[in-house]
Length: 271
Image 1 (cartoon, one colour):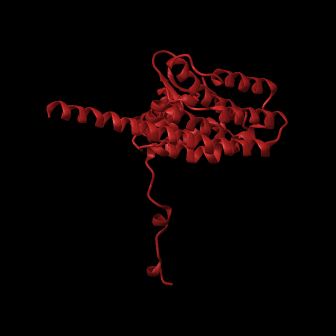
Image 2 (image 1 turned 45 degrees about the vertical axis):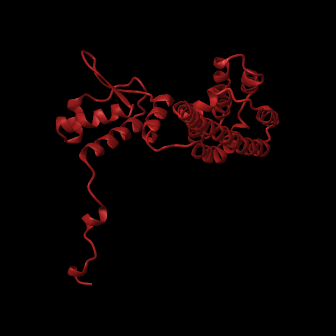
Image 3 (image 1 turned 90 degrees about the vertical axis):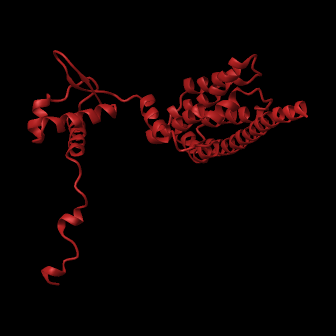
C-alpha cells in the first residue's frame, strides 16, 4: 500500500480533540486521587494550576467552575481562600440525577422494572454483612406501618417508611454502586407525582403479604441465607409493582369519573 492509500491519518484515528477545559478537569481529578486529597484539603493556588497545565486563567477558572458544579470542590474567597475538596453527599448526587431524568416521563413501571432486578441482588449482597442492630432497625420500621393509619399524615409516613425499609437493607450491601442505585430508585418513587397521588389517597388495601415478605426477609438475613433473601425480594418486588399499577389504574379511573360527572351535571341543568 502506498502512502496515498492510507485509510486514515493518525489524527483521524484518535477521534475529535477534547476541550482543554475538560482535559484539565480530568487532570485535577487524577491529582486528587493520586495525592490522596480528602474533603477540606485545598487544591494548588490558581496561579500554580495555570503554570502546571500551561493554560490561560480563564480556562483554569472554567475547569474549577465545572468541578464546583459537579460538587467535587467549593470555591472560597478572601484570605486563605481557594479551591477546597468537597465530599459530594448522596442527596446531591441523587438530585443531579433526578434533574437529568426530570423531563423523561418516568413511570411506576419504569422504576419497578429496575427494582425487580436490583432489589433481590442488593438483599443478597447485604445478607452476609447486616448485624443484629440492622435487623432490629428493620423490625422497628415495619412497626411504623403494620397497622391502619389514624390520619393522612400517618398514612404518608407509613408509605415513606415502606421505602425506607429497603433503604436500610441497601446500607449493608458491599456493592456501593448497587446500593446507591437501589436507594436512588426508592427516592424516585417518593418524588414521582403519580406515586405521591397513590400514597396520599385513602385507598383501602391489604399490606399483609408485603409485610410478611419483609418479615421473612429478616428471618433469612438473620440466618445468612442469601439465596432465600434474593428469592423473597424477587416475589415481593413483583407483587409491589402489581399493587402500585392496580392503584394507579383505580386512581386514573376515578380522575376520569370526576372529570366526566360535572360535565354531565351541567348538561342536565341547562336542558
